Amino acid sequence: MTALLKELRFSVPWGHLAAKAWGSTDGRPFLCLHGWLDNANTFDRLIPLLPQDNYYVALDFSGHGFSSHLPKGMLYQHLDYVRDVYRVVTALGWKKFSILSHSMGGVVGGLFASSFPESVSHLFLLDSYGFFPIHPDLIQSKLKKTIKNFINIDDTSKPKVYTYEGALHRLLEASFSLTPASAKLLLQRGTTSVPGGVIFNRDIRVNANNAFPLSISNCLMIMKSIQANVHVILAKNGLDEELSRGVYSEYGRILMNGYQECLKERFQLSVVDGSHHVHMNEPEKVAEIINHQLLKTSHLYSNL
Image (tube, rainbow, N blue to C red; front, side, top):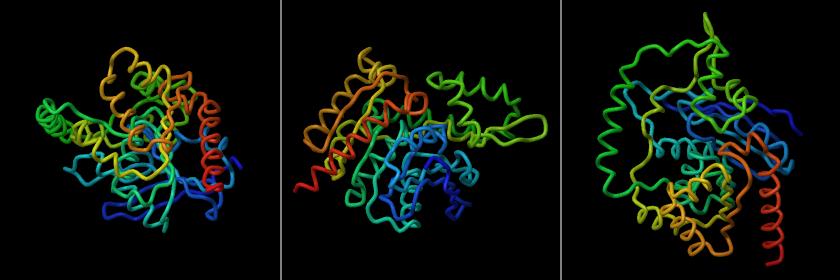
């Protein structure tokens, strides 16, 4: 099973949330959450390599892909995306499900799994720590900068029109971890044809800093509520490289230690060769780990 089952639409007060689904609705449910500025197509090459008896729903967050933009004047934040998740799983009638997430989607997944711990059985974090802590001394300045940046963006008029090649170049320039083939996949869902070329579907307001201002101590406290099996898969040329170079190293290691302390045998950390978008560029490397972890935990609980 590699074909798309169908496109999904979920009504919300400001329009709709879009998603795409693979597999049978009778299968074990997985909600797939993309990264910042990406869309549901980020999982197109990975999901066909995963167990085919599961049901996978890949969501476009508000303002991304085929989902509606928020009303004019509204700012996008991580909590808005957590709200998106809650609306979708409620509409689907899911009481217990797993989350497969990349980058910012992992932050949303971490917040959701902490807030609704009884609902999440597995939380896969692809090149994501699951939380995005901000140094306490920087919270106030970041809030100020975010508000000013948002006002400037919100006053922007019509989206810019690109040639297809120009849009591809722009995406590769902004996301250097993408290969041209992976970028083209994202453009399929991330652009719309207009007279003179294409425009990006994503709301320009998502470019404003959308992090919810949590300190590292806040993150560690919230993390304690997670009941899911958490699997962090870092890329050597992604967050793992930043750890080794000292970027985010302090908070990254604290969060990994926090998972280990809180979850013990329910936490697994793996590192694979590749870039931040390794799940798109070389999906077999990530699929091997996910499949092993699902099989491992399945055997673990069947023997209890």
